[in-house]
Image 1 (cartoon, helix red, strand yellow):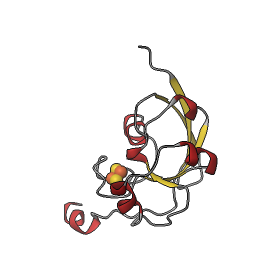
Image 2 (cartoon, rainbow, N blue to C red):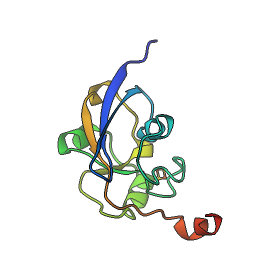
Image 3 (cartoon, rainbow, N blue to C red):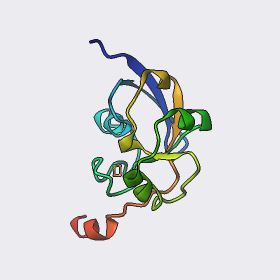
Image 4 (tube, rainbow, N blue to C red):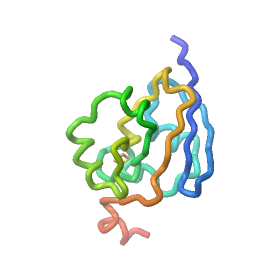
Length: 122
Ligand code: FES
């Protein structure tokens, strides 16, 4: 089966618009990592729901169309900085065809819940 290409726009922390194409079924985290998009510190835990650095803010209509937030995602989302009513974690969102052309905002600040543990590595 040929996977549809979907265009996704991100607005990064600097307010720059980054337009990229993605395949159906990829997560938003996959896109940021595979395309090496300029979003600082994104996806620090590689999608294991341990960091909340993949916090993204969606338009309300898009948010409503996405599936329900699972408890595990909600727990981590609650810890993200600048949480909004239309926030989700990018590593939990799979690209679907209807998402073509959506604009996703990256919050100004992010909270890496693992920062304390990780800081020794830097
Ligand atoms: Fe860490 Fe999504 S990448 S919670």
